[in-house]
Length: 170
Image (tube, rainbow, N blue to C red; front, side):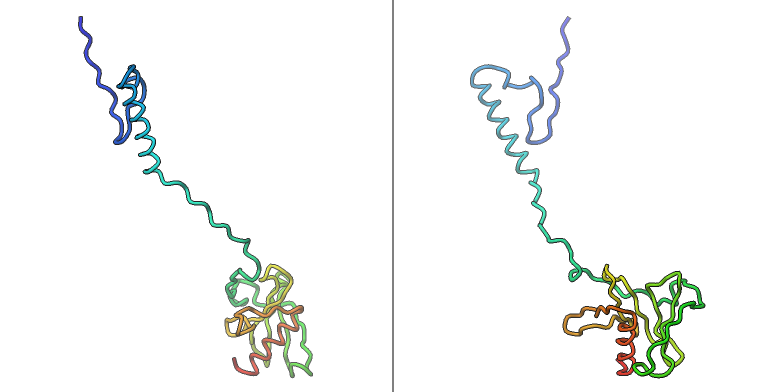
C-alpha cells in the first residue's frame, strides 16, 4: 500500500523549515544551497530583529535635579481644625501677634499666623533633609534667579521669609 505524501511544514517568510525536510541533508551542490539558505535566513533575522539600544547613562538625580511641587494648604489636608502647638514669634522682628501654629501629630508643618489670620506656612523635609521651606500664596519662596526654594535651618527663619513676602505683598 502506498503511503500518502506528507507536506513539509510551512515556514514563515524568509525562513527554511526546521528539521531534515530540505536539501541541506543531501550531499553535493544541494547541500551547498542549504547552507546558503541558512546564511540568508540568519541575515534576514538580524535585519528584522532590531538590536536593543544601549540605555542612556544618567547620573542619579540629586537634590538639585529633583522637582517638588508645592503641597496642599495644611488646613486642607485633613489635619485637626484645632492646632495644639503655638510658638510666639519675636515681636521685635515680626511685630505684634505673629506666631507659628501646628499640630503635635504633624510636627513638620507649621502655619504662619499674622495679624489674626493665616499668612502662609513652613514645612520641613521636602528637600529630603532637615531644611525648612516657606510657602506664601501657594508658592515656595526662594531665589528668583535659580527658581530654587530657599532652605532655612529653623522654622522661625522660614517664617521670617513668609513675613517679608507678606510685608512686600509678593
